[in-house]
Length: 281
Picture 1 (tube, one colour):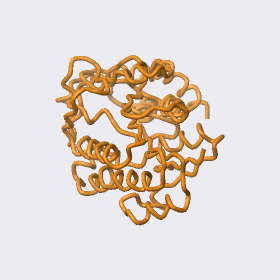
Picture 2 (picture 1 turned 90 degrees about the vertical axis):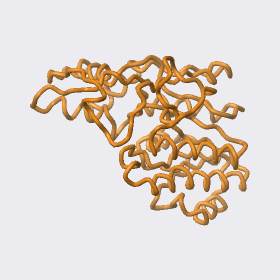
Picture 3 (picture 1 turned 180 degrees about the vertical axis):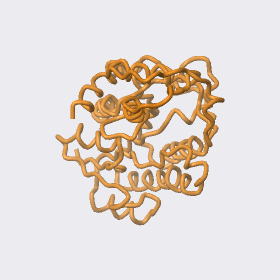
Picture 4 (picture 1 turned 180 degrees about the horizontal axis):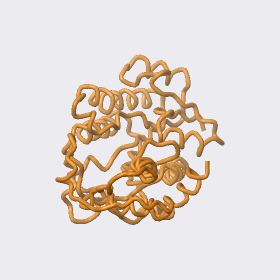
């Protein structure tokens, strides 16, 4: 398999490059190819002729997307469309990474792949537009939605908790009324590896099993590492952000189940494995 990975220097991209090293993936980031430049991505595809493209390049700074919306739309929508068009023209399968932010967060149960979308932030709207361009321009595709991602090297919420947990200071107030599936890039990369070898298409949810609030995730990190700084729960209204966060980011992995593909690991199991490796370095 000739595999091209966009966004290879990001947190997920680095994990994908390591996890899939046996197929010798070709990794590119903005320095090698700006996905917002249609001619550049077309030239790259024609030169590499990949069998599969893992498209992880994105503008993921959620609050920055609100203040720099034009850039968010160029990268997450137009850029993804450019990748989809170039992949299809060169006969490549496309696996594009997306997000729980395409949903409103109002549902009282986990979202499955066929639930109605309804983003409430620039980030969510631009990622949804990217999904739609993938579906339009590259029929041979998988859209892989994930949520609450952390991984080796960061940056992530887990890394922030590890840093703050060893600092002196007042109790940390952590939001306790947003719920989701904390997900390791290692677990996500493993699921993507399964999809690479499966003759499937469409939309898949790839987040770890089980659920937690941000407060519960912080408590798990602290307990695992023996950190003693006090953590107290708070509501979303006490931690205002430029971009609204979905109160419910839980993703049901119905497509994985229906296709008979391996289940995602439990979020605590993945977190403890990550912490054991990350904190031993």
